[in-house]
Length: 98
Image 1 (tube, rainbow, N blue to C red):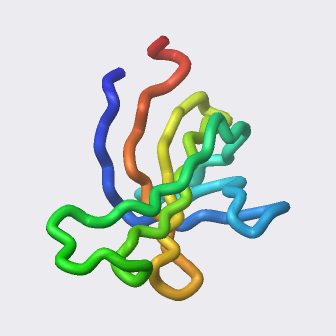
Image 2 (image 1 turned 90 degrees about the horizontal axis):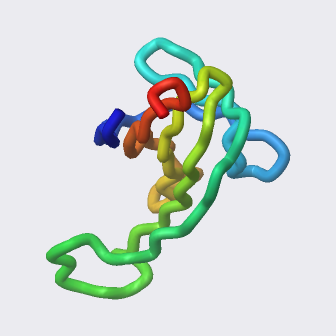
């Protein structure tokens, strides 16, 4: 399966560390995260930003995760507003398709 852009807000349950995802809900389905494959940060600026300072930066924590069903997703926590909002960035595939 090729990567599929999603770009939708999701609900995420965290555990251990405050931003470590353990499960997510998307389109009525619940996915249990069995592995955090990798993490990274995005502190870049949106394209076309007229002002470049800390207020206009993106503040995102990305996670590539594997679920108990073998699905692989990239999700991120957008910390630019309040406690943050979670988004499903893209679905990368599943182990069954590999």
